[in-house]
Image (cartoon, rainbow, N blue to C red; front, side, top):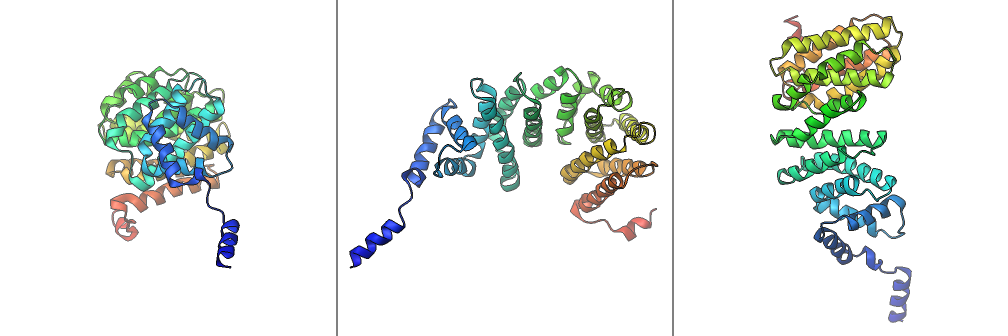
Length: 339
């Protein structure tokens, strides 16, 4: 009787498939890690993308990599995009989606990439940027990936000359502006000066003040890139350039609202700026706080701003108050004594 019940129990609760076992997953991970090529990781990403397997082995294998070998996984995913020219565009784009999510998890859970992996990873990122057939959507993902990787690279005081040279070499405005707007407020003068010497500041001014084609996306990118450049310059004894850019932004916003009647574009631009402030505020020091606060006050004085735009500017001030002075909320009573 007991044996019959055991048989019934085993038939109603079958063991997990072999491909879902820890031994199988571990062996698969070792095989992929043991080879320099990207065949194994490409097969895994393809399975995840198309959902070819009904069992959970692909998902479990990917989770094993992301949990135990995240830095190696970052390099492998980058190689799929940069070297996988015979791989379908869908798979290559999917590898960037996985990578963007993985880097976010690494930042949140592990405090960033390992220093010993940074040179390898940034070289693979540079190779991805040089891929000629990148779609606009892929480039947006790549710009976010550059943003996440560059934080760890610049914190570790590692040079990234290839990235600077790549930005300088770009034709047109949009890609260059997008990349600059995504970079963290950690750039040193050695990285930034070649951009300024190659007229990057003038490019931003032209986009904001000479945008005759009314290209909404380009104007928003110009606003975000101009704001980002202000944050980079403020601690580099470039005060005249900082305030020149501040007044260019204020003038451009006024013209967009009161002359060109494009307030909705201004709204979109300041949504991006508010996100930038929220992302960077923990790294702000007194100089960044001062210039961002004053810029916000100047924008608030412009007649014709819509409710949502004003809300975004107010949100910027709230974020500053939340994170300034070591993350403590500012004492408004104390501030009022000095107004």
